Image (cartoon, rainbow, N blue to C red):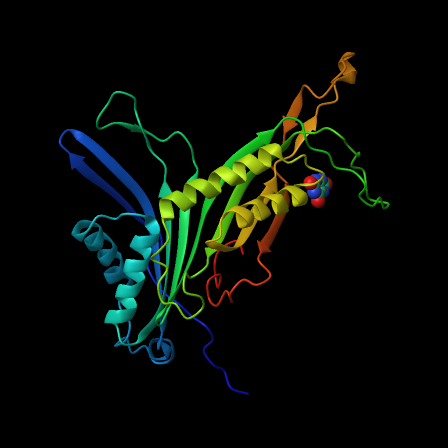
Length: 301
Ligand SMILES: O=c1[nH]c(=O)c2[nH]c(=O)[nH]c2[nH]1
């Protein structure tokens, strides 16, 4: 029996980066959380503590801030690709990189050039993986809290000795959507670029589709809604190979008001925060190109 080093990566997690761009008096801010991880020939540091091949996580952090100064950050996908390719092309021992970016939404306060409000906790995300010459881009959205007050049923499930849940043909359906979608590489599996995609337009279109489908789909289960949301994206967006969704069922229980001599016709609910059903799944094209390392170590999937 021998003990060997398994897969590993290392980097600086959750660098908080805020940029201000000035166009005269009008300021624009960007607010990102950037995590970098490097992979490669890193056995020495693990086995003997020889750090000759270890680009310090502190250096990785500094690179994030220096890059933000040297060129406009642009779309988070482009920024992540630039960072990942930089590490892989400048460090001989580093053969792969993973860059995660979450973008926090700020809205301008009406009528003011330099004041902003964080109106939602929602984040636009990307997870870029570089492996040698290849790049995968998995973008997404997190913490999109949605609720429909009708158009949701849940019945027909098995009843065993522990089942107490009542069947319902009208309930509140609420969830906090985490979605990630894997982009096809335009030239197929051998293509080293994903640079032909309009990331901002794609993000806006996909987000709109996810919300519109949640709203319009009459739901017999959150699982059915999840599949419909992924299917809608794949039907409309040829640039996407696969969609993965994680959707907690934020239960709303009708309160029993009978002790007070009152009826409750689906009007008064207790919004429970835990436990919650956790519904997760992937929807993909059956001819999707191989995912390679696109999802490897990604949180939640
Ligand atoms: O949409 C639902 N899916 C389930 O799997 C489930 N389980 C449960 O208790 N309620 C629900 N609702």
